[in-house]
Amino acid sequence: MAAGKKYLYGPVPSRRLGRSLGVDIVPGPDFVGGGEKEGPPKVCTLDCIYCQLGRTTQKTIERKDYTAVEPILAELKESLEAGLKADFITISACGEPTLNSSLGEIIDGIKKITDIPVAILTNGTLFYRQDVRTDCAKADVVLPSLDAGDEQTFRRINRPHSDISIEKLISGLCEFRKEFSGQIWLEVFLVDGVNTDAAQIVKIKDAIAQIRPDKVQLNTAVRPTPEPQVKKLHPAKLQLIAKQLGAGCEVVADFSPSREAEFATSQAETVLSMLKRRPCSLEDICSGLGISRNEALKYITHFQSQGVIDSEEKGGIIFFKAFS
Image 1 (cartoon, one colour):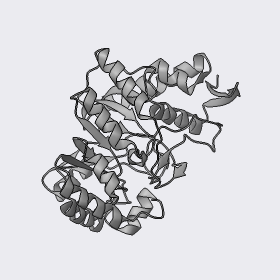
Image 2 (cartoon, helix red, strand yellow):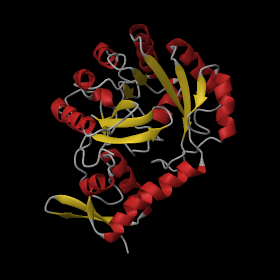
Image 3 (cartoon, helix red, strand yellow):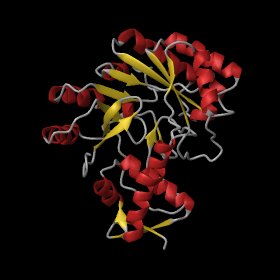
Image 4 (spheres, one colour):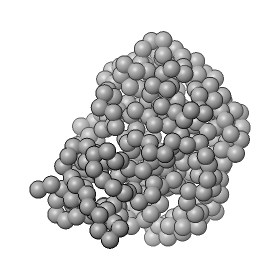
């Protein structure tokens, strides 16, 4: 694990990417405050009702240098020299990674260090911009999202920035397909009763036909979400929709008891166990468990919503502690 790292996390097992080493290029600022009304900082173009990172606290379409390139590459080089192995180096963010205007430079730097292929997890909303498409084309695999086939459903499930429309999203991905020779694996996240009726599936299928991805991967809410009304699809319904969407569509949602138990006990309960023993800062949790800030913030937010932890500031640092 990339323990003690600020930008790297993992490698973690991924159903989509195998052994994936994550690189967080839009990290949120230090967690401040605490209490039920506050959540982890998250910078994104969307505020999806299902996002496991919680609500978006800064909704924007402005690209800027969220992180310096050199520290990211230094962490990667150090980890690789220490013997780290991965199937993919996966660029992600506490929000949307294409908001980082240094994305292309980061990918170039990674490729000078290692031959491990580079993947990008993105919501695809900024692909209407040529600079974003140029940056992402440097990767080997790009994994964008498409959760709706019309504007009304797009706004209901993805809650986009006011300057982003479903038409911009689809047309941007179509342009990227023309320019990109690598793999596009399109994720469709299905929320029961929101984007799963027959008419919506037909519209999503039409959009997929325009985009022409190499794979279509169906997912649903198998982990806690910021909106309690978000309901996961039954595996049988997911398989049915996969057939309706046609060849090249696969289900990637993991309903296996072992995976759900791993989330419930191996990760979340380990965090809670730490907080029962002593107060910990966010950095304490990340370095102690070798997990990313995104992951740690997710657990903190979940436990705060359950009312089982509290926070206290000391010396400008927020410490979290479980109620006894």
